[in-house]
Image (cartoon, rainbow, N blue to C red; front, side, top):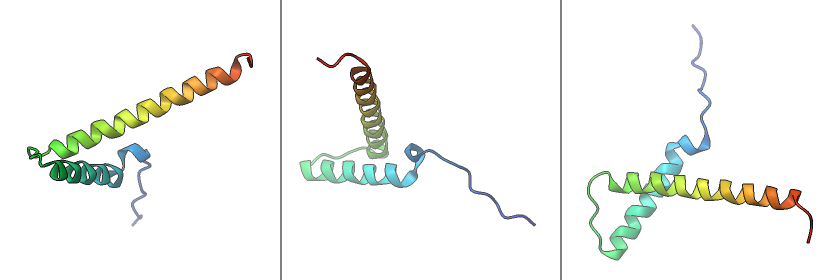
Amino acid sequence: MSAAEPVPRAALDSLTLRSVAAIAVAAAAERLGLTLPAGAAQDLAGALVDLIVTLGLIGVAIGRSRARGPIV
């Protein structure tokens, strides 16, 4: 009998990260007095996480390209 080995997953696929984002979206919507349909908080949280990661990657790409260019 062998123990099941954990499957390596990216941090972005973490259910904890997405759950925290979904809770934050739901709390913000409740504070603003908005009623979200079922599953909307999870969808918005996933989109928000994807947006933040994309903007971070764009920032890294810009930073690397500036660092390789001439210092003016």
